Length: 273
Image (cartoon, rainbow, N blue to C red; front, side, top):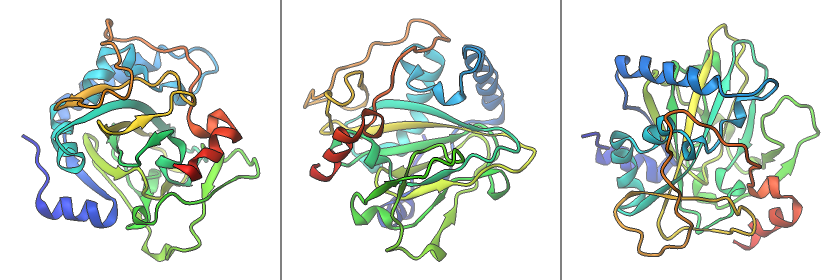
């Protein structure tokens, strides 16, 4: 059984993240990367790997990763005994990729209330400062949801918005290096991002999103939202339940709807949540 120590739980509460948690062995990782290759083969010509989003709804391979008991064992002490899984997304930076991820808070993008969710980041490759590891501003999750501004359209960032970090000491920025098969977990309000990957090595990671069962999605923003009970009981029943995927490798063809993707009307609601 995977377990967080009390020190790790305290670190998460204070700093908003914990990382380097072992999940998959080297043999299991080889199987995961073989499966990833089959997932990548489902992309159509011209599609980006960013399209591999919520494919756990159609792929048992991805669903089983998201519901892996060792991952859930790490999440439970942070979210409580009753929580759901509702999203997954690959972030793959190929060698010598200049694309970065600007400073942001996950909760800004999500039409969820209350803000009490977390993200697991599973490393499919070794991740370090050389190939664009995630970096965080420790403790920034305690400042609430902050203003995000639109970028000038340089095309060098995966995101179109950037969080205002002027109130924080950027000398505290911390990189999160990990070995393949390890995970990090971070709060939905933690400010984080990542630089480009100028190295000759790929940097592939799968993000998985979990929320306590009292978190409700605004279905007028994201009518496609589906949740899967990961642990405990759903005593609230606020969100539509997803169906189990019927094939080992499948994909979605669907428009995605975060707050930012839904446009300015939905984006303005974030200040009322």
